[in-house]
Length: 252
Ligand code: SAH
Image (cartoon, rainbow, N blue to C red; front, side, top):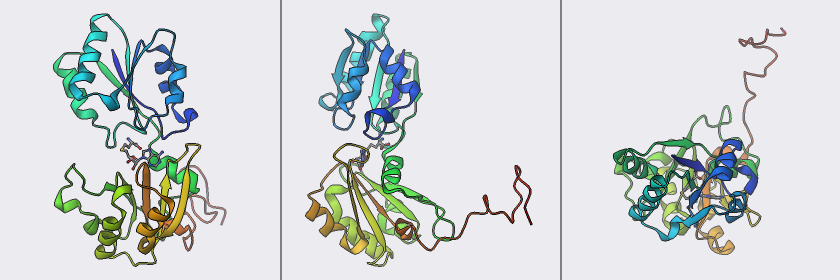
């Protein structure tokens, strides 16, 4: 049996209770060494085999899992954040399916949630933005043309940009070309929830200069949109004394 587990954004205690239990029971752990906090590995039991997938190909990961399965062992495949975002998990799940190896997925706290917590931010502020675009700049992995940063920028929604800290100059250009004003609030969050976390608040027009000044080229999220300022919003209806909800009668 294989458990694909989200390790959370960084801090060791931000893995889920279920994920931690699975990690403690695992006979084999294959972890994404580039981003998973190695401190989590001390939760594994004595004799657990630990492999760093940062140094492995998909074929090697699958081979390690097949070996474990043949011995009747339980494998945890530990991914950063939540496995559903930029986790390259589909290809693994398909490889397991093809070999009739059963697997389950345990969610994790994505870095975009960790970053919001660190910024003490609500992405969806009434009156400001009610949508969050999770996206990335094109790198070696192609992004479909219809999903360009420029086209999303036209919506002026809250945007969280992954995998792009090394491309801040181009990102800034694309955001401006798409319609964000240069003064639109933005933040670069480096290693959210890790001890070495850095929160850099700036504007869209200052993204590249801020990244350069702070020496940030990887493991960061770029968050842009009017919501980053956390001002000028309207109160929620949910907690408004003047509104009925399914759980509460209006007070007036
Ligand atoms: N599945 C992961 C994302 C993996 S892609 C998740 O749910 O978070 C790797 C990218 O995620 C990094 O390049 C960076 O943009 C972002 N990332 C991962 N952990 C991060 C953290 N603690 N702080 C800021 N960005 C992070």
